[in-house]
Image (tube, rainbow, N blue to C red):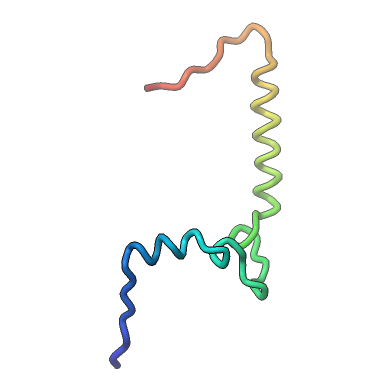
Length: 69
Protein backbone atom coordinates (compact mmCIF):
# COMPACT_ATOMS: atom_id res chain seq x y z
CA UNK A 1 0.00 0.00 0.00
CA UNK A 2 1.19 3.46 -0.81
CA UNK A 3 0.38 6.41 1.39
CA UNK A 4 0.73 10.14 1.24
CA UNK A 5 3.41 11.74 3.33
CA UNK A 6 2.66 15.23 4.56
CA UNK A 7 5.71 17.35 5.33
CA UNK A 8 5.34 20.56 7.33
CA UNK A 9 7.96 23.29 7.48
CA UNK A 10 9.30 24.60 10.79
CA UNK A 11 7.66 28.03 10.52
CA UNK A 12 4.19 26.55 9.98
CA UNK A 13 4.52 24.25 12.99
CA UNK A 14 5.61 27.15 15.22
CA UNK A 15 2.59 29.17 14.04
CA UNK A 16 0.28 26.25 14.85
CA UNK A 17 1.74 26.02 18.34
CA UNK A 18 0.51 29.48 19.26
CA UNK A 19 -2.89 29.28 17.58
CA UNK A 20 -6.05 29.41 19.75
CA UNK A 21 -7.15 26.02 18.42
CA UNK A 22 -3.98 24.41 19.81
CA UNK A 23 -4.71 25.78 23.29
CA UNK A 24 -8.26 24.38 23.51
CA UNK A 25 -8.93 20.66 23.87
CA UNK A 26 -11.41 19.11 21.44
CA UNK A 27 -15.03 19.22 22.66
CA UNK A 28 -15.57 15.46 22.36
CA UNK A 29 -12.31 14.39 24.01
CA UNK A 30 -12.99 11.72 26.66
CA UNK A 31 -11.68 12.36 30.19
CA UNK A 32 -8.90 9.84 30.75
CA UNK A 33 -7.23 10.25 34.15
CA UNK A 34 -3.49 10.63 33.71
CA UNK A 35 -3.74 11.34 29.98
CA UNK A 36 -6.27 14.07 29.23
CA UNK A 37 -6.72 15.11 32.87
CA UNK A 38 -4.70 14.70 36.04
CA UNK A 39 -5.26 11.37 37.70
CA UNK A 40 -7.03 11.66 41.05
CA UNK A 41 -4.27 9.60 42.67
CA UNK A 42 -1.69 12.02 41.24
CA UNK A 43 -3.45 14.94 42.92
CA UNK A 44 -3.52 13.08 46.24
CA UNK A 45 0.18 12.19 45.95
CA UNK A 46 1.03 15.79 45.08
CA UNK A 47 -0.76 17.05 48.20
CA UNK A 48 0.98 14.42 50.35
CA UNK A 49 4.41 15.41 49.03
CA UNK A 50 3.65 19.08 49.60
CA UNK A 51 2.57 18.40 53.20
CA UNK A 52 5.64 16.23 53.82
CA UNK A 53 7.99 18.91 52.48
CA UNK A 54 6.32 21.56 54.62
CA UNK A 55 6.56 19.37 57.74
CA UNK A 56 10.26 18.60 57.08
CA UNK A 57 10.99 22.32 56.79
CA UNK A 58 9.23 22.93 60.10
CA UNK A 59 11.27 20.35 62.09
CA UNK A 60 13.68 22.30 64.35
CA UNK A 61 17.24 21.17 64.98
CA UNK A 62 17.77 19.32 61.71
CA UNK A 63 20.35 20.37 59.17
CA UNK A 64 18.81 21.50 55.88
CA UNK A 65 19.31 19.11 53.02
CA UNK A 66 21.61 20.27 50.25
CA UNK A 67 21.58 19.11 46.68
CA UNK A 68 24.62 17.29 45.36
CA UNK A 69 26.29 19.00 42.46
